[in-house]
Length: 341
Ligand code: F6P
Image (cartoon, rainbow, N blue to C red; front, side):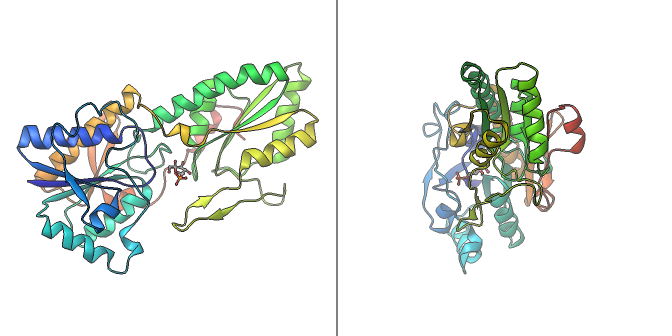
């Protein structure tokens, strides 16, 4: 069998572990050939690729980023994107393509699969918002990075009697905010799923200072917005790919809370540090299992599917179901943490 693999969309710790696993299972166990496309779908659309053998994936298990590079280019952006992809898959004699990516990548994977290409998707995102899989790799690493930052920020917040508003990633969902906030014992957690009430947030933080505490930590997901009409708010803009370019919820909250509380407030934006660096052991294991099962799916001819974690098992789900909707934080999870606004 000849297999093409690519990594597309925002990078994520664990991508290299999937690539390594695909090569190990395919080349060593099945005697397949594997090629890697450069920079996500761009590589497939331009037939820009290289051979991936055991040497190529040596020592990358613990490496962050992706040795293949990534981009946000999608086949649907080109008039002849689907036809070009089909042409290159045929020219290269590929029996399977394994795209590793998040929401946008998996939607493109579905498009190409519907057009007849032999696709097995592998989900990834630090945001953990892909439906049909309990967890995506990268999430555990991102939560760990955010939690360590929150732990560190507590001491400086206390020294200066400040409110620190810590912005974590999460365009549409508050998984990183909820889990890092829980792990670090944040005093308020603000998520995109629930528009926040600035009066309530002011009250929660104010009550802490009234009770004699010297600082407060608020974790906010980058996509969080206030309830309509409760506060002047700049939501930002969208980029050429239709992705939000947020105006900075933490910055806006810091100004608002400082004014309302008369306490020093500072925004801290963790940004891409959450996506960088070495994956945790959990993410390496999940990524490795996904790679192994993607190759098995290709050998069984189970195309149009995506690997997924259900409980402790790796299973296959239709790409169509995986991209139907995002996995938001369920309402009942808020009850476990009284500080979610
Ligand atoms: O989807 C993953 C993610 O890290 C989001 O949490 C974040 O909003 C976005 O990517 C950032 O994208 P970019 O790297 O293109 O700025």
